[in-house]
Image (tube, rainbow, N blue to C red; front, top):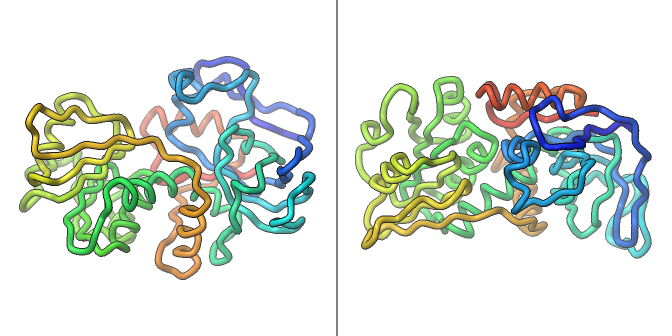
Length: 307
């Protein structure tokens, strides 16, 4: 089968298409014919070797952490899934940037029926990160003012929708190219951070900030100052520094694989309470070019890649 692999850490050029043996499912695993995988910003850090302490991998490595596709073979002791099932999941050992991938059966859920199967590849990593930020760490509740910082990315699109679903008043920061889609996803207010400081656009403090962008020291302090006393900053990109005696709490987290959360998000998509925003669909062989576009700031929302 064809697979996109890296043999060493480095620039986007280390990603190359290769012919490799098709994997066979082990006990408790299934073999999936991949309909699509998706690009995540963390893929750049993984490829550069910046995440090796938190996401160690063995080289050569087939990339791809999101998968949507159809089960074509069962390993031993798999009783909850069947050949022909359309599934979606997060593949923590990678391998989804290929024509086939194996995955543990208990890490997969039924793909949403309301959208094309390939589009479901945009859900797992971004959706789980947003779900856990909104509901588990921030505890967003009806009537709260929530600022989604970095709403134009894949996680941000889900975070806006989930915070709105929880009943919050959602303020979203995004560049001008993303503000229209962010409004369509449910943001009550948008702030073009390239045109004005976020502080100048707000009419008062917020209860919660969901931070989805990398923060330097000064920008982290500026964000903290936008939160009311007793509020919280939840960051998926590292911990903001909290000054001593600050009345604002801060939490940073790394999303975990959770099929309960993933299935709940799929249900929202199937009922029309949430949608999947696909910014672009590209052939899998263009994966290195997608990485280059991401590094140049040309990626918006979710890009899926089809074998």
